[in-house]
Length: 207
Ligand code: AP5
Ligand code: MG
Image (cartoon, rainbow, N blue to C red):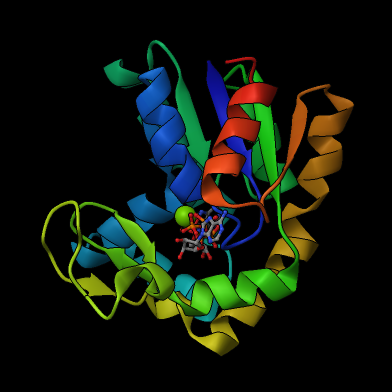
């Protein structure tokens, strides 16, 4: 199955993608994770992307489209994949139609108020991608999966979160109509507890 997870920053795309991908045996392709890795490794793509990400703006379409086009031809995508955070503009979605056949788009819906609380408390592991909320950590700053240090993402600062939400509403939300028109959209309530979100996603996917 070739899937897209759509939804605002903090909706739980990454959290749910890990579980769904494990269950379905397909790779999670997060453009945000790929760009953060490129920044950490100081590659040309990373250096170009950093100023946009730090401001909460989108990285130019041409950069992310090339990243995804190259990623989808790799062997592990032969039996399906889950795109987490791509596409994020109508131009990206139109480009994707030129090189991929998508089976379903899961839109994880959460109100802006809840998103701000989630993102300000998020802690992540840059080594394995583990994602937590401070409310789960009891003061620990160590990743339960790999033992490395947890950090706060630079773009989870309050003012950057607000600009990411504005960008989401202006540039990414139109994709809900785009994929509804194509009969691919499956909406789930992302404000539910994590296990219930997971069950709702598997149900809309018929799994
Ligand atoms: P990206 O990394 O994709 O960030 P995002 O879309 O802003 O989404 P997040 O990763 O912040 O949230 P999420 O939905 O994955 O939530 P999570 O599961 O972590 O992109 C970062 C930047 O890269 C962009 O701003 C842009 O600059 C650039 N970029 C990336 N892709 C691009 C593209 N295609 N085009 C252009 N630029 C691009 O959960 C959040 C928190 O909530 C966690 O603490 C988690 O524990 C908690 N949580 C999750 N689910 C629940 C629940 N059900 N109940 C309670 N808490 C929950
Ligand atoms: Mg994410």
